[in-house]
Length: 174
Image (tube, rainbow, N blue to C red; front, side, top):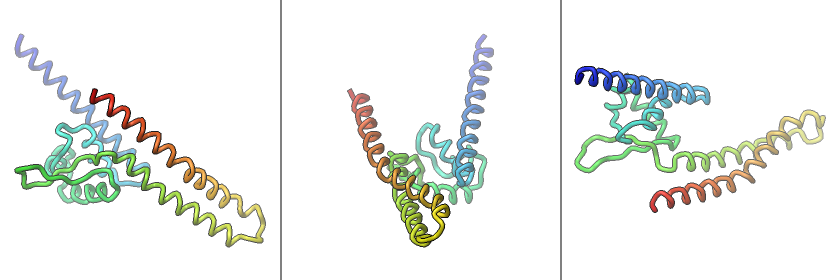
């Protein structure tokens, strides 16, 4: 009966590993849909699931069946975006990567600068079309108004999120 139990445990582990790799691929496809490399998404997907939460470049290359060069390039991109960070561990010579704490909040805050830039571009475009057929302005007006709305609303949303997150973390320490 012990052999059957071992086979059953191994089958369950293999099924779990397969599900994890499907998740990793889905994250990669999601990144690709927003214009980022699939491999960057695959790395991020694995870091969402991995235990321990930090992984070396070699571990990432092994799990994702990717070249070390690809891992190096994509981890640099993820660091630049602000989703992951490079860390060192006491007594270890190699670097590790992990998801940056508060990555989503910081990424959303960075988007504010992009939102402002798009609003300003729309305003410049409207200045260029001043005195022209008003119908030509509709696209720029929508662009300006949408980004102005986001500039106004997003900071309050981020603040509410941070308050909710902090309250949730406080509850977890009790």
